[in-house]
Length: 264
Image 1 (tube, one colour):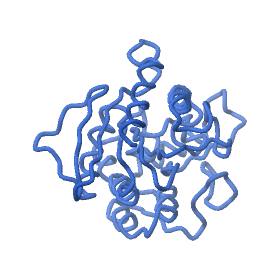
Image 2 (cartoon, helix red, strand yellow):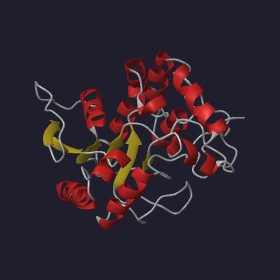
Image 3 (cartoon, helix red, strand yellow):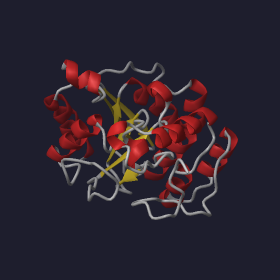
């Protein structure tokens, strides 16, 4: 089998063999909106099969593997959100990496982007450890939660517009369930920035008439019933960005330090 069956003992697996599975976008919406809490929502996220291209790619990658991980079992399923259940900081990325989250079962875990990200989160007090290598390694987010706007690893790291739309209800419902405590949303990259606007709207936040453009350090304040949330943009700690110096450790620390400051 080219993926880990739910309920077979993978560390942190939120699903069981009885968890309902979405097979199309309509079922994603129904199962997301009908999830009573984070535990059931993340379970349902982790077994979704609504996008045939993404299902085929994540499972092929889990079967073929990268040579460096040839002896490892790959997760090969969608990546659920994880972290604090009452977070003040929400960290949003684009999608799991084919040989990162798709291998380890946890977003930003086991790849170079995660090495940069978790080191910064640890330095700024948002993560218990400076590294995150596999599910069950003892890593813990502190006052923070992390999720991807698209839950499956996409070919060439580029989900199609219809795949983004199909996955939106998972993020919208997850955000709605934690919105009462969230004060800052850190969007890692331009797509995460764009993906947050419909999620904010569905959660009842008043949005500016024109969506402010993404930029590193850009802050946009929105409110729901008088309670503010700040959307904070950050360049993604991808290898391309870190190798070229577009993102430095100091830049990430500044973003997450600011997130902590705003969340108090």
